[in-house]
Structure formats: C-alpha cells, structure tokens
Image 1 (spheres, rainbow, N blue to C red):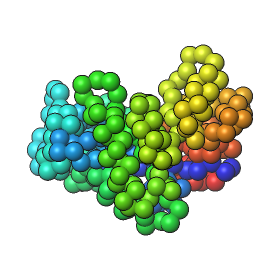
Image 2 (cartoon, one colour; image 1 turned 30 degrees about the vertical axis):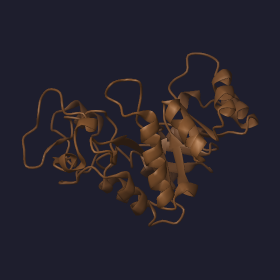
Image 3 (cartoon, rainbow, N blue to C red; image 1 turned 90 degrees about the horizontal axis):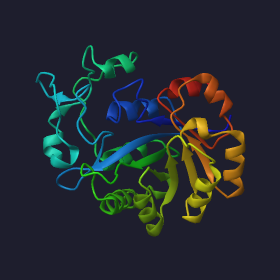
Length: 264
C-alpha cells in the first residue's frame, strides 16, 4: 500500500473535526497529512470549518446551553466572535453524536485559523495539507477568488506551498490557485456517467490530480486518469476493505486514519 494516509477534517471520527485536537491527533498518529476546510470570517480571516453555518450538533457558546434552530453563518462572524464558540463536545442525542459514536471530546477547543494549522503541520517535515476551499455559488459562501487568494497567500508566506494541495468542488477557486502557481486536485462528487470527460476537463484545466468520491475510483477510471498525467486520491474511505482495495492510489482521505495506519 502506497497511498498517503490523509486524515479527513483531521480524523473526524476520532476527535472534534477541523480542530487543533484533530490535527494534533493526526500528527501523533504519524499520518501523511490532513484534509481541512477553509472559509473566510467577516473580517477576512481564513478559518477552518466545514459548514457554512455553525453546526448545532457540536457548536455552542462557551459555557452556554445548546441552541436549537439556525446558527450564525461563518462569513457573518468576526474571528473574535468565532472564538467564543466551543467546538469540542458533541451535543448528546444529536444526529451528529449518532454519526460519531467513537469521537473523543476535547472540551474547550475552538475554531483554528488556516495560519495556525499550517504552523502546526510544520511539526512534521513531510506532513501535507489538503486544503479544501469551501465555497460555492450560494449567498452563504465567500467570494471564491478572494478565498483562493487568501489561502494561497497564507501557505506561500509560511513556505508551505510544496506540501499544500488545494481541493474543492468550486473549480473557479481552483482555477485561481492554478493561476497563482499552486497544486490542485479537482474534487468531484459521485458521478452519474462516464468519468473520462470529467478527467479530461481536469487535465485541460491544468489540474495535477483528481479527487473523486471513492466509489468512482475504479481501476479503469484510475488508469485513465493516470494516462492524463493526474494523481488520484479518494474521499472519504472509512471501511478497511475499501482502504485495502484502494491502496495503490496516491492518497486516501479518511475519518479513520487509525485504521488505515494499521493496514499500512
């Protein structure tokens, strides 16, 4: 097995997702890297969080009660306001708790910035970051070009570009990263038809890799992508049998990096 072990959101089944606790655990497991989601706060700071709104399944004001109903959007809160939320404990009885039964809580952890995670990743000389630019065409999203410029600038200033792979479903942001000289693996959701035209488009767009939903990483599709000069990594692979089957990929992104590490 040669695939990089990439901890999805830092290993979301093991520690609170996209938090310092998760990324620290991935480093402790000696993973090859971690995947994370990046958005912009109201004051333009690149912060690490998956949903466009705070998730009531694991986000609440520090010392406060759990909240029902819609939570604030990330783009509407400043970094200082985002720091007021505790992201380290799952709400008992929630759907999120049911989906993450083995998650070890980390009371009091908050939302990190991309700059913080890049500094943390520098602890291991070969540790990589798959940086998902979290944007789309909705009003909840940051401007994709501004997000791309900000995230690229942070990784460049930290001297981390050689270990940063930018991914995402909004290819406008990835096209901007390519203009700036960054490495991009273009993400796709489950495809409903032949993968070859999509792979062709990625190659024509200057992408260096294809990052499909793992069922699409079939031997034929992977072989074709490699004829187009693309690396191939798959998300999100949590079953050991699938991990073993996909072991010759370039990267496996998983919520259970501990299981993948045991196979390796």
